[in-house]
Image (cartoon, rainbow, N blue to C red; front, top):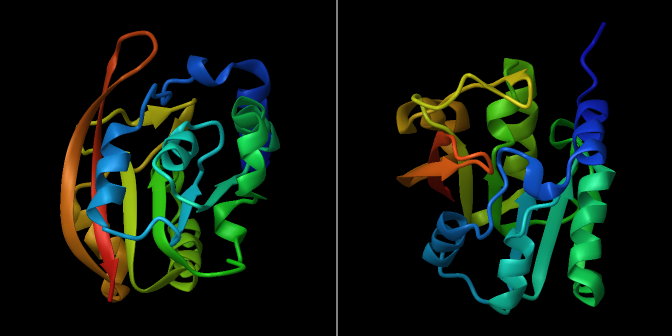
Amino acid sequence: MNFDSKQHWEKVYNTKKPAEVSWYQNYPALSMDLIAFAKIDKDQKVIDVGGGASVLVDALLDKGFKDVTVLDISSKAIQHARERLGQRAQSVQWIEADITQFDPPQQYDVWHDRAVFHFLTQEEDRKKYISALEKAVKAGGHVVIGTFSLEGPPKCSGLDVERYDPQKMQKELGGSFEFIKSADEIHVTPWNSEQKFTYFFFKRA
């Protein structure tokens, strides 16, 4: 039986509140720092891939970003975010899609992904992700991808994950993206266990 990714994530968000999942953050500090490092204008386009119920969209709106898109496979995760944002949700573009089947409707200045790419354990799915990434990011645009580091857990949400360091990530993204820097984060889950993440910052060549 084939694994149904959408069914898995709908179940997660239908059975748990956003603050009850292991990847929950009160404030996405490192993500915001890396987006700031891109030095884009507030009216340039940012997409948060797998953003779901994350509060990154709230933080971006608070900073005055005007063109924010949130993509997630789970309609329930998006619903959580929209309810939390209230009226402000109307100023965000919401896309319910599987990233491996995503055909970008436009191009973006910043692509942000915290903890989607590491779930793509099949090479074929990673190639589809990177194909969407290449279509979606403008020339000179920026990519922020956060995954479990090589010292991170081998599983999350009951699923196997791939873990990355800069060399391994650079090999995946190939020649279209120039590696600029990485940053490590120790994420503390809602039940006080530690998970080691590494974030990678690339520029579209």
